[in-house]
Length: 160
Image 1: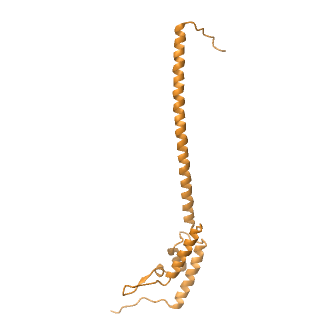
Image 2 (image 1 turned 45 degrees about the vertical axis):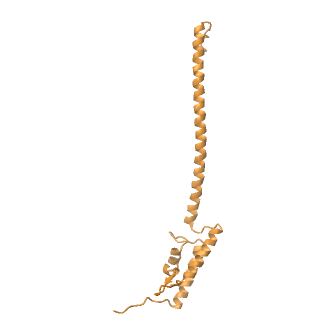
Image 3 (image 1 turned 135 degrees about the vertical axis):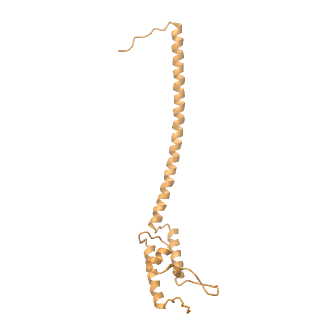
């Protein structure tokens, strides 16, 4: 049985693929992402029409590591992506949406907390007001009873 070796990249193919990767990298870093794509190596490989395996190190038969055919481009892409993120630029629209939603959730949590505080204050005020009204009602009943017992209170006719 004859063993077949994996096809090696020709210099022409490698040069063509590197140009395609660089072109795809520029598109992604400008924020021109395909539907469902992210600013990552998977999308970079898909846009360039190459496999992702070229972005990662390989192992020789003796176990030593060697760089992947396009590993240097993957590292450049990651460096540039990190620099953009540190500069506050968000390339991935989904990442921007996630960031916006996180901020919105934080704002809503703060609003709920403030509303809970106001609600607690209003509940305490209501409880105090009701207890004062009940005490005033009891005092009015007591005074009416006391006035009726003395008998010297004159009732006014009802207003017309």
